[in-house]
Length: 498
Ligand code: UDX
Image 1 (cartoon, rainbow, N blue to C red):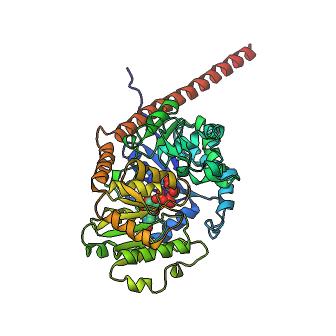
Image 2 (image 1 turned 180 degrees about the vertical axis):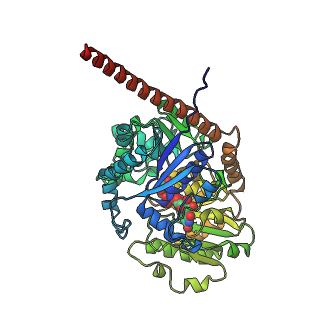
Image 3 (image 1 turned 180 degrees about the horizontal axis):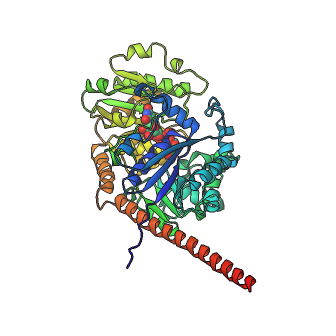
């Protein structure tokens, strides 16, 4: 008997064009390729331009993100396409216009790209995109592709977004001022959450572009075949199973560079400053690492209070002060005057660094973070306790997990504003080792989940099996329809001849 032909699944993977979304999707691409998948990874030309610019010191003008991976035998192709704006358009300063375009019109560019890729494929590829891609269901439907959605935030945030109607019915969305500290216990999979820990858009009364992005993302959920969550089942033990009951979700996190260390790919969009040598001169667990991620902005006043807090705490630190960390203000004058001189022995101020490498260094003893989900996962993985200062989007909700649920960190400030004395006190508390035991536990839960037999590894395997079955079904259906059309055609052909 002829053996069934084993189909090599071919994924077209398109990340949302931001650092925090590109990083985990690249890692997922490497992971799937090492399981025998063919991957076509697609970045926008703008992202590709930033990648190439930030890798200039490697001697390349045009980066080929996966060349090392291909040398190791992985079948990963890499291509780019336009996001509809010229390279010199300031996507950060015009974020609303840019996001509106991504939601409404970007699909045209994806459609053109997909037409070209599909034409050149031996057999039908499938799609893996960010859940926030506003076009994935339409494109998957048009090209009859299996549709996989990748969620880059915790399951808790997914659950709240998915149950917006329930929040609306209970008067918690939009959130009126008088309910800003209510306790919510009715969301499936979320035992208890205070409304103050809701994502920031839930607090807005007017419809913003972020509402539109979330609404569109969750309208498409029912037309998604598989949803991959960048979280660990054991760390969100009620939420993940509750989602599994209503949707085809798979908790496969943490999806980060770590799982595929054999091939380390730098996905940085900003040139990195080397910190290793400086760190090596510091005693173990003596350095506080400070970063507010890749795109949210703070205020000059907060930055200055943190700076004074560092002086009062008299602590070693590495501080990522991005050029645009304060909107409309040059990075050079956001810090108090003379600050850099005062801290030149104890502090290293950089515009960007290799965060993974910094957090993995034994010199690091704490992480003052904005609670972006990648930062939370990276900090916890490396066993670094966190001082939480959430700014926007999912970050307040992520803070709840770090501080209230996992108990591996504390809040930077408990009142309305950030003050230097409180900053200094909190830094000292964080760095004194109080969280050592809890963070070790969380870190080992994460690491175990990726080991053979671990929950995330098993979930990823289960996804691969289910995906293969689905792809076979789609191909079979396609062949059946083709066969039926052929039979009907032959029938009419012979009838007409008679
Ligand atoms: C945002 C959201 O807040 C986050 O929750 C969501 O999942 C993605 O979009 P961002 O603000 O960029 O992300 O933060 P984060 O999720 O922490 O991602 C930042 C990434 O940049 C991390 O992977 C981090 O390692 C990297 N980084 C940051 C660097 O490589 N160098 C730096 O100097 C700072």
